[in-house]
Image (cartoon, rainbow, N blue to C red; front, side):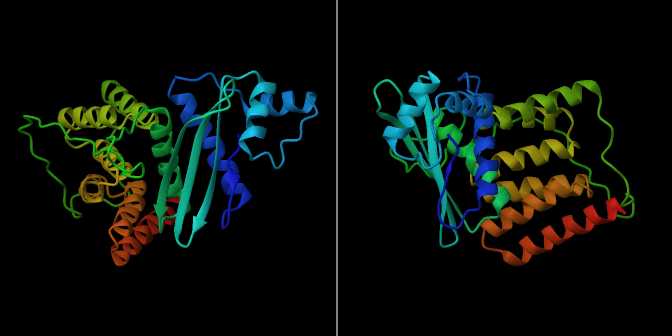
Length: 278
């Protein structure tokens, strides 16, 4: 079901997050999903009005008409400066709510809600971000960084040695494949596996900025902002044109309450992007 829009949320944003949630569910490889288009077509044939269908009874009726076993439904709203995302999994046959969970995103940008959707996908499906039973659902499990016996050191070129217009160094096929594997694990919400894959890439190609950026993204998704900041900073030192790392470094600083550094890196990313487009 499309997420229900609560106070302070635009319809366009809710539609985008609903589709993104569907994509995350598909990427778990645990569900055969009914697409939005097929869903609407079937309900139209049954002359069923989906508008305003938010009660559990109505959602179960939709599931029965679609012939599905389970149905995801939920809502997103804003309480003050905090976004609140609620998701529940309903068994169509019994009509019972099997699981329900919440993800909160305090003082965050709208694009950060994509991370919240990934987190809540892991929670509601049990795939990706797992939690200890005694912990609150809004606190994801900390991923652990494997200890390695790497003896290489990172040699970071100075600004005088590296032109601003220089792009990331080219990657070979093996390096690209390792990065693609790590990115896929991250997109599936398998953060422990993704972190290990990014570390493996870093260990073999110590100057790969995207490996450091990927580790930062995993730590950010798990709210380990100090570690995320460290990895994003290294990625930027290795590739001064990696504007995505600058943007997320700004987000991590904002999470730490450092608005000055947050603004600094977001401005830096914007200026780099504008310069590239000219």
